[in-house]
View (cartoon, rainbow, N blue to C red):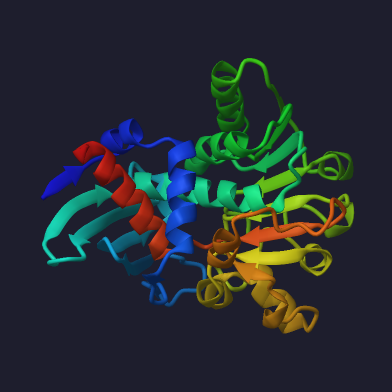
Length: 314
């Protein structure tokens, strides 16, 4: 059985091939039971959790287990630890133990980029990104891989982190403009794509600020009583999700508007698997506002981990 660490994953994967693998995997036959998230503390102010995400297809079986301790950011420990076990679908023997934390960064970003490939305008030029955490660099690189952005505006609370992120991106993409901005009507209105990867419990911008044709990508929140966007954003958008069963169990972005009576679950346009099967731009016109809400799936973990395993085996 192989042990695949973070460094080996970074060596093996790139967004172009991973996005293609995700498209093929979500368009093919698979089984993905509901992810199970277990809260470890009854205190409503404590979000420590443990989760299990199983999935399998014709080639491989996988299960991801992770812990999430958000207050670890104040200590020497990481907020998230994760491992993925891969087993052969043919005979069930263990194939690999894969670093799930690094796979999560890669697959989360690649899933958002795959959705953007279907939902954002092909001529999108301005990406507005909220967040400066571990996911930020992966998310931005993934979005850049599917659209020819000319400008990226970075918005984050931590001035030191966002400055470091800007410097890293400028080194990687010297012909692209990177600016540090704030969440204002002017900035939000100018965006073609808005991607949010934050821990914010409240909306990051007002839905009334959004311009027609904008694509919104939301991946930061996993709590039913919190949200990165307001109800106006949901009402104005054609809504897509990575997994209905997972999103409707966890994501306040949809659960709160449903509770308010301004949105219904049947108004979700499609899941990622449906988009992948069609494998074409899903926009009806350039004035449509589209929104993709992702909370993570066992299938995306399985595909990304198996891709790394195959490339390292080859």
